[in-house]
Image (cartoon, rainbow, N blue to C red; front, side, top):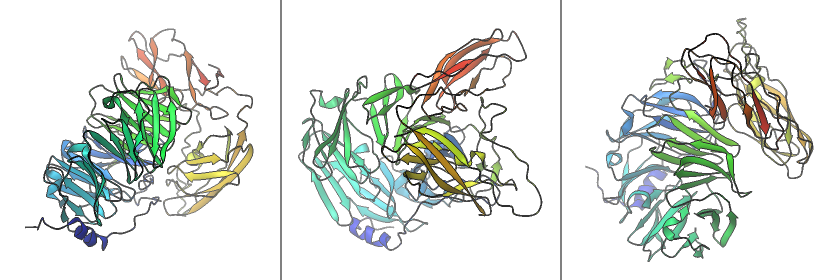
Length: 583
């Protein structure tokens, strides 16, 4: 029997001896030759439970696709995932066990009994010293060190129910109980605020944004109370969802937003048409921001810097959905927990990903291959597109180095540019290649967004040509280099029309097919594009505009069963400045 009387201070001291520094890493290759993924880079990827298949799925938010699936071997209604920058843990609520998810080798660790996670009132997250679980009913907790260390119990004294108790990334337990907001750490119980009647709080990194509902006032971190300048009823005020580290936290009422910092209101915006109410949810991660509405049920992307609702990027959500919202540095994740989809909202759009589409490889608990997956080609990619180049292995018995080809890019100055640098690279031996490094450009900054793509941000005001070198590696770690050359045009430069690419898709009698027509279209200045218009075929069915699998708008062809063979219809793309492409 474990002594439940141990203090939080002692629990922290015990696990501190086994805590390790966890750093992000890029997987170069799997031994079985499957595509390497940057599974441990939390900025780009996240794991989700798929209740339809009893699997957990690794999703790349920027690329808008699943990367790998792991068979969980238990019924998923009892499964949950908690994850941090360097650790992912699978929780089985029914069995009262936890399992480490090896995001590098894509396999599950052995089950470890942690009875507290079976409590329906338990809150679980990952802190710096390992997994932390708190039972809000009994006001007790347990710390489970990484790599299967023995659980160490502790006591809180008091804990608020449900969202009124949260665990920060640094492992501190925040709880709102008996009119007090407390932060409990290894050094003691710090009362942050008291004499609260009705209040809510959220975590911005490791700091709290506290809203006094009755007083219509808020405070951030250790700052003073700030009156929220609105006449809205306190019940209609929103506080942002838990988010990554920032210098202020957002409070929202109707069309108005205020970012409350330690010294007062740091940012204030009025976004016409936002129309947020107390039933909605608002999330922000860097430049990405979204309002998750309840009526109508939809995800609306927002440019909070410009103060506008981006009406061209709206994702419909089933009204009955049980939605979970999570954030990383530049990504907001919205998971339909019991459904098929997860949405990744980033500064450039919304990616809708089917968790159980079967495109990614399915692996067993030990990482063994169960299914290869169907690949990531999507309906609508043109037959003559060079986005993906298939080359047979040369089979010469020699480990040939990969081939990295130059990438010329034209974009408009002042905005970040995503460059899928590996799209035209390959390995003569047929091995997968992955992006492993990037050099700094002379007139901006660049970072790895995921295993295939870099994100380049030009210096403020820079117009001209900039370049940088990137490095890829094959399955044996052999490297190759190529140069990205980016021509930055002035913001007011003549705008060129987007270039449409022919799309093909196949379907059967009476089976509609969605064609992701914009996915392989290109705007010369990298401006956002949408469908301006489309025609109907002369026979065989009808065409309508819908959300495509990529999260962009697409076209659905619905055959009427009266004909067979090929039908043709056209569409016209238009960019955000109104330039129309050829149909």
